[in-house]
Image (cartoon, rainbow, N blue to C red; front, side, top):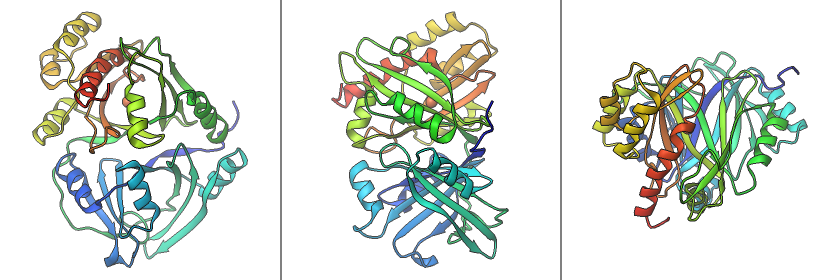
Length: 363
Ligand code: FE2
């Protein structure tokens, strides 16, 4: 096995470009239970953008909006709506990450550059990914501040956490015929390997289908499924995303919890909507999966999905889109041995997604 030229320590953060970062921060605080920990904006001397850093467990979201119209943030929001701009990965050597990926064909948007304050140094560099989405490499060099130089800590307490511990995987939707291009890109440019491959035979319903490949980095710390639409009778949920996002981009972020019952019950209390699966799903799954030591009645009551493979099982649930456009949503996942992505649920789930899509007049 060749040496890993891009050793990734894990997800550092995800940056969203949004229309109104102040209100988005309130939403992620009051509903998903993220605590605001740092901010930059006019009060910290940043004249063009306002950013709120939100954290829960090891998950860090940065919510950024523009102060004016002449800005890549404003243009991004006008085109895509609120969405993910940057997937930030922590590395030990940002300079090397940029050098190694560039030599393998990455488009460098920002060379490695350091920012310093009294708490230490953070080095970041950026490469282009699918559509307007970018990968950002972050080297923290024992940085002791709240987030990064330029950000002031926030003393707000925030709402109670709902139990998110880490990011499990981040999924990108790409155009028809481009899944292989992007999985090759991950392999060639980032040194990732293919963990799984699902064809339209695995993931299809009467109306629509998709294909998916899962790429994993050398250390196994980060996983990136890539979806492309496949031919179906009607518009697939991937095509709906591509239409409304006006391009390729991040479809969903899966976050782990140690107790999915408590997490989902609390999120429901806070008015987060989840995809509904028909009750027939549970009749079918109780039969297919049998006793795995979970409370089937409670799973059904909360709408949590179950999937099982040779390594174990997993529990998962999907929110509805978190902005007006039917684009980005979240997944809550609890793994019990399974390293899969819920392939057995895809079909049941897509029937449910299509019901929602039909309600929006997009099927
Ligand atoms: Fe997922």
